[in-house]
Length: 283
Ligand code: GUN
Image (cartoon, rainbow, N blue to C red):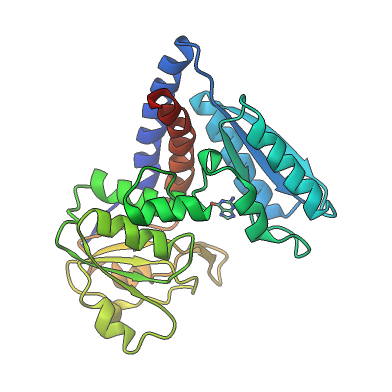
């Protein structure tokens, strides 16, 4: 029977720690403001954006919402981001993705100042991560490292296998696990004999975007299994990229869906917002 890694509880601890720190900063006169930009009214994006605003309110971070029409031009959006870059009262800028098809997402991400890039998506942030320099780290992989550390899972020297090579999860996850001295393998849709590779994992991180893809044949007994996926099953219940019923008896520890990785992403976004003023205080 696996130990459940409770992302809801751990994310609550992190948010409470941040709330205290923000309170201390506020008493010293330091305020934190996150600008959140949403283009259009995609319902899933609205849920994410609302959750981010709620977390800001809980911790004591000001959030400034920009709800823009679906047909806004790329130039207008670039103009807004540039104004926010120049606005000293804004510490972090988040442009909710995906953007409508007529807007070049990469151009928008590259327009955000790396010093306000709380999503960690800018190429400068990615470069800093791989070089081991200080900078913003993509929130989901940063949250997974916190989950592992706060659950007492040792990373150093361990076989870490990542399934999925996205820019937002798989690739930064590899950099972070390397930084913790893990031995890292990144697998993907073209990996030959995937099961043979995943069965070597002491820590298996699955971010493949396929419902319940990882079954018992992919998992070594005693592995720690981290599930980044989120889907609806045939009964409309939430489920992940891992078949939980099959994985749980084999794993030594496992994240549930929901309540595992998901809540950590927002907690780490909040941490990045606080980091934006921590680094200013040091410089
Ligand atoms: N859309 C889905 N996840 C994310 C995220 O972490 N950041 C942004 N900006 N958009 C997203």
